[in-house]
Image 1 (cartoon, rainbow, N blue to C red):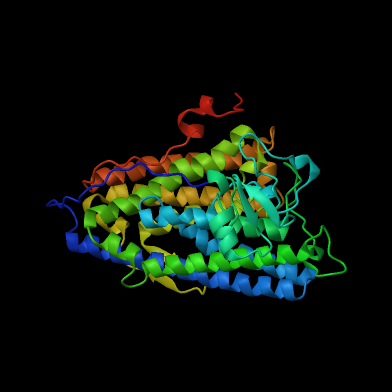
Image 2: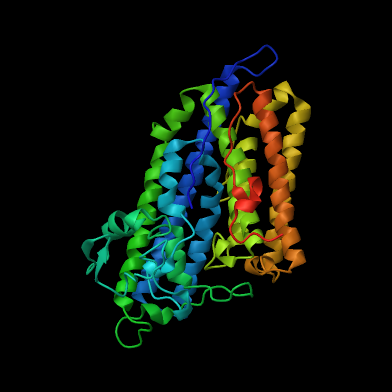
Length: 423
């Protein structure tokens, strides 16, 4: 779920012992080039996903469903490396909820298990099932959903009635439509939607296969459109690129704000520590596909990329250049070495989580109460991310930037405020 950053703006003060403003400008130019490459890769892989979805709809089978799932998984790797561009870049943060908002009340979109329940006090539309109902009332307004279109999803359904969990678009809506609910709790196993949910006519399972196909097609079209927009923002002359390049100090603040807020409040807190506290697989980021271990790993890699000024594209080519690391090393080589070591440590710890999941202990199993090994793996990464955040703060100070208020999380800052917390 998207959360807004509270941060200060600052102007870089160039001192005698520090890298020049020209060096800072080169860092920001490379940062923008990396952002452009990451979003271009996200767009390219989303278009691959769109092709796979079209093939699934045209010829539903176990093979075409698996191909669409594989394309979705591949699309997540570059996108997750883009999340470090949030928080410090308002254009990205304001947009991000369209493509990556979570968690979602999936009953808004399609059929769900009987144990899912119906409307709740928090969300009257938690089990609306738009795919199964072409006419309904939404916040007192009659909605004709005879035709499921990108406009219906984006303009009417997404965050319906101002409720954030009414996520109708983006990666996770598509994920649900490809995998279905994960009903395994903290046991091994992802969602198990059958390809027959997309068979037109005889052989259709769970009804409304034509409408389900329309929803999946429309949601994927929206994702591609949204990524085209953001790729354009970072291209030459794009608004996000120009905003970063306009002022060296504010640009560096944007880089470090993204690194610190993703490290601490978002990834260590909301996406990892909270799930351990609640032992709740619903707190998985990619909960339908059991891909959370990869999402966390590539978030961590994105943080490292931002500091080192380096990104490896999906085709294997590398975008690299002047970096924050260069600026810090010119002023304090010991601090730069510390920052790089801590980034290595967090990526390694996230890699340990990834490796464990790939070797049979899925992320939701790690969240099970009493799974000491799983908790140790997750908390090892959480602690590494917290540790690196303190060094990011030292980097801010070393560059004579005003202090930054990184995004926080009750799971880290006020655990007693988390409903269901156990000691």
